[in-house]
Length: 415
Image (cartoon, rainbow, N blue to C red; front, top):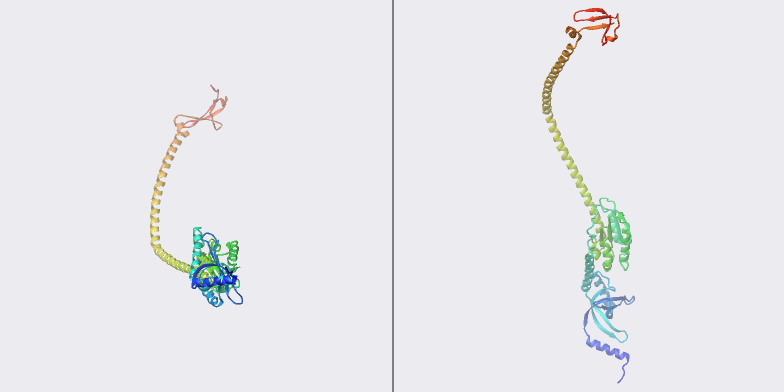
C-alpha cells in the first residue's frame, strides 16, 4: 500500500470537502476573536460554540472575511445593530467551507444577518431588565421625585466630547437666564473602560449626593457601534438604585440601552437633556407666575369684597346709632326708675331703723328715768355709784324729775 504525503492527504481532504460541501451555509456562532490585518484589511475571526450548560466549548473554527467583503459588511452590520463587530457577540453568517493544504480548515464569510445579532442583544437586554425586576430595583430611579428646580447638575461625560460642550452651552445660554451649577465627572464614553469609569463617577457623585439635584449621563458624537458598553448588568443596577434622578442623553434615537430603560428620564441627545432641565425650570417659573396672578386676582377680589362690606357698614351706621341711642335712653330711664325705687326703699328702711334707734335712745334717756321716779345723786359733779366711797359730812346734790336738793352725809351703810 503506497503512502501519501501530508500534502497529498491534505489535497485529498480539500477535494473531498469541496465535493461534499460545495454550497454556502448560514451558521450561528459566537465571535471569540476578531483581528484586522493592518495592511491587507482582511479580517480574521474565530468562531466558537458553547455548551448549553456553562461556558465549555463544543466547537471551534477559524474564519476569514476578505477585505473587499469586510469593507462593506462591517459598516452595514454596525449601522444596523449599533454594536461593534467585535469579540463576544453572536452572529449569523453565510460562509463557504474551505480547506488549504498549508493553513487547514477555515470558513470564508460571505454575508451576515444583523437581525440575528439584534435579537441576541435584545435577549440579553431583556434578561438584564428581568433580573433587575426580580430583584425589585428596576423602577427605583423612575420612582424618585424629580426636583422642582433641578439647578445643581452632576454630569457624567467625556470632557472632550462635543455633546458635553453642547449640553453646557445650552444650559449657560438658556433664554430666561436660569442659573445652573454644573459639575463634570469625567468618564469614558466608548471603549473597554465605559462601565468601570461610569461606575467610578457614580460612586464619586454618591459621596456628594446632597450637593446635587440630578445626574445627567451624556455621550453624543460617539460611534453607534459603541452602544453595547451601556448594556451591562452592573451599570444598569447602579443606575437603577442611584439615590438621585438620572437623565440619559447618549445620542442615539433608534434603540434604548439598558441604562436608558432604568433611568428616570431618557432623551435622545445631550442638547435634549439640557432642554429638559430648562423646560423643568420653565414649568416651575410658569407655576410661580400663575400663583402670582392668582394671588393678585385674589387680593383684588378680597379688597373689592371688603370695600363693599365697608360701604354697607358705613350705610348702616346712622340707623345703628339711632337704635343704639334709643336703646341706651330706654335703658337709662329704666335704670333711673329702678334706682329711684331702690333709693326710696332703702331710705324707708333706714328711716324705720333710725326711728327704732331713736325710740330706744329716748327710752334710755335720764329725763325719762327721772320721770319714772328715779333720782341722780352727784358729789362734786360726779355720779355717786358706790356708797362706800362717801364720808360723813360729804355734800351731795340729788336731781329728781322736777328740781334738785342738797343733803349732807351723816353716816353710810355699806352692807
